[in-house]
Image (cartoon, rainbow, N blue to C red):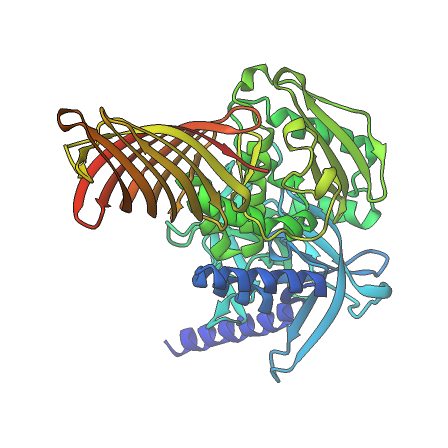
Length: 586
């Protein structure tokens, strides 16, 4: 019994010693933002708070302070030092830092200003280089050549969060599926992934999956990178296999991972083909949008999506934002771009791609769908070794003056607009600059009296000016002309309307309160008596729904409304109406 206890203690001490060795090469990775990006995010946080989205504002605060993940040191054959981690750990990085903690003293050593030299969207991996060719490490983690099998013992190393701070964790488990095929994580055509039971928690992302290897400097070799965790199952974690990691790192070090002009042409064509595929959705174009464009345009897209996108899209973007605000902004912008490009007649869509034109940032392409009369200019530039969209200009006549990612006359602008926009199948509408023109009639639901005559027939004309996101002012003229009487009543009002965007259809519940003063003229034929009288009418409530359809330069529709009217301070009557409307945006 005593020998068993001693053996167990020996194994424990060996594990602790090995953990300390691994700890020398596995660190806490944080992305470092440039000042312009921080300023943009702080302004966005303040606008969220001012708009009542206090929870979202808190997510931005936490994001600015900096999230973290894990990463490890790799030393190339020529002695140059690199850090390998997951792409989602440092998505918006200007530069990257890595911090190591001494197992004995608790002291930390931090290296800053590492550059992201290459990344891969498909396998969620980045390679970072130390600045100025610094080589603080003589050795790093070794890549394993062993083929994992089900039941093999594996270890995880990294810094998952505890109480908001990174805390070292060295876990142990077994391989439960050495060749898992899960398309949502990694396309099986690229590689299978490793499923295992060693501990993985938030913050472990980018850290290594290890196997014991006496020939390695740390006593362990890298078998993969820990990237995913199944929250709906116990001890079910996933790693990118080392064969994929090693191949990409080798390409990054040699510089061959940087996309070329020829590769870009194919990438643009693949991007265009998405919009002619009826099975595709907006998430497919996320990999083509740069974080530079997201930083400039994501704010407006996020507000617009929260207000006008379908509920399933809003939920997906809100959930993404709560975990990673910059990714939430990206998906909001991606949705806006997708709905702009996508036509109702998807089957007829055939996007052609122009020859590339050299630009200051990279290359410009014109994408045209002649069948649906859509035309866009895209500017692509290198971001972390891959070409992505940095400018997106809508060249269609109806929105050439301004589009969702450019300033006036199609010229790009780095200024973020304070106006929140939404798209209806390519038609841009900015809610602060909309006005409605409506012409219609109202019919009483029951007989009522205004200055001794019965309302029976009417004509109404009004204009609504939308001065904020959902509220506006109304100017109108109401005329009633039953037999032997006439009422002319100008009025003013204020109220709100909340649009729900359903691609080519907008449904907008509204409510208005209004007041007016007019002149009533009526005759009593039996007594040959006529009279004029001033009338004060207060619309206690005008509420209903406006249904609008997308056409070319305006959005026509119909409105159904109900009025409860107090007339001359003493008589009530209820009426309902039907109006034809045209909502015009600039």
